[in-house]
Image 1 (cartoon, rainbow, N blue to C red):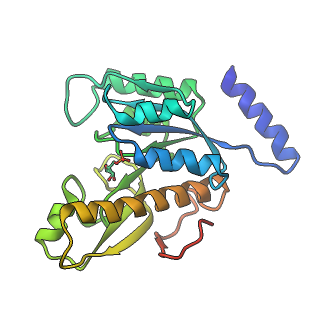
Image 2 (image 1 turned 30 degrees about the vertical axis):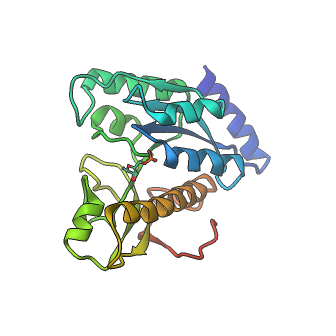
Image 3 (image 1 turned 90 degrees about the vertical axis):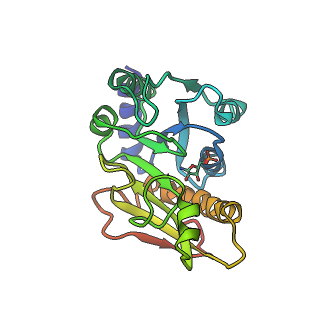
Length: 230
Ligand code: GRF
C-alpha cells in the first residue's frame, strides 16, 4: 500500500514536471564511511534521494549507529551460516525489508558478501557496488596489498552495477590515484577511500537526477580530480 501511494504521488509530481527523491537502501558490513557520504549527499541536495533503510550483516557494524544518529532506520539481519554469502532464505529476508521500504536502488557500501538471485532478480540492474580497485583489475579482497606487490603506478576505485560475477557488473564510474614509492597499504586505502566517497555520491547524483541508468550508460565515466559533482 505504502509503495502504491508513493507511485501515485510520483505520477502526480511527474505531471507537474517535478521529480520525486529516489529511495535508497544501503547494505553495509562495518565502518560505514561510504554510507555516511551518501547520507550527507542526500542531506545537502547533491543526491536527489533519501536513505530509507540501512541493513547490516554484522550486528556490531559501526555504520548502524551512524545511520541511527541521522534518524535513519538501521537493522542487523542475520545472514545465515556462511561467511562470504547470504543463506538463500536470509537473502529473501533482506529483499523483504528493502521492498517494505519501497527502495528504488540498493547500494552495497562496504557490504562484504556475495549476493545472489533473491537480491539480483528483485532489484535487477538497480544494485550498485563500490569496489576499491580499477576493475576489471583486482576484483576481490586485499586490493591495496596486491597493487603494491605488483608495483602498479596507478590504482583507484570503481562503482559498478552488481551482477552474479563478483565485482563483475557493468562499470559506472572510476577514479584514479597515483601510487607513490612511499605508499603503504594504509596510505593507499586512505587515498582510495576519499575517491570512493566522491564517485559514489556522484554516481547517485547522476542516477537520481535521471542523467544515467543501466540502460542508457554506454561507457564508464572517468571521475576527474577537479570534477564538480554534476
Ligand atoms: C571500502 O573500501 C569498500 O570499498 C570496501 O570496504 C570498505 C568499506 O568502508 N569494500 P566503509 O564501511 O564504507 O567505511
